[in-house]
Image (cartoon, rainbow over the protein chains, first blue to last red):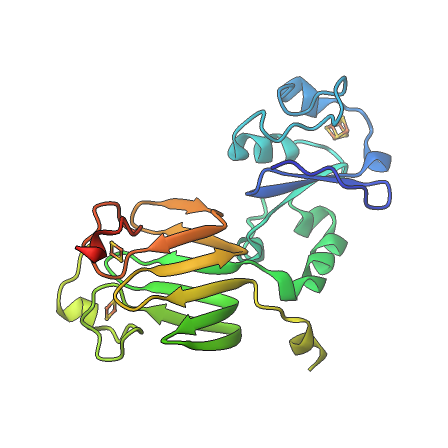
Length: 169
Length: 63
Ligand code: SF4
Ligand code: FES
Ligand code: FES
């Protein structure tokens, strides 16, 4: 899904996995980006950034080459943005920390994380509505584990018994 | 306190009796065993163990 949304002269583009920010005033036209990856950064087309043009890892690599803060990026999964390696030079954490705060403002709208654990339960983290046995409950910033092995004494929740029964996926 | 107010449920998680876990809304699904990550919008995850399309429900729970 592509988004091209104006934000005080700046733009952002996403492929669902990462968001690339474009800050035109900071662009010095060193042109690294389109020399490296014309499939994504093509100044002759509108919008000039096509997030479908290359795999995520390659886009990150090229964004990191931009010598200014004209091109920066972040993971859409906010959890991943907390531990960014220093060699990810153009992650917004290093180039445009003000954007990190901005995403912090949307805290209440972070996607719920649903993890299917290896040979174990489904771990759900975030803010969501839980419906079970006719009861509806709103859970804010919570964490629950739903049993997949069927052996739990606390169904529908996991109580760790999947290990004892040797449950495998 | 103010923080709390702003938090809206982002997804609906429904545990069906003798059936799957149905999730819809704004969520990221990660399957650690099969190393996949997606944002499907709606999904049914098997809780009965009979499915042949793990981690998803394939309606085998009816059998
Ligand atoms: S690499 Fe950065 S500064 Fe150079 S043209 Fe691309 S966006 Fe502009
Ligand atoms: S998955 Fe943990 S007890 Fe069933
Ligand atoms: S819950 Fe539907 S196949 Fe297991």
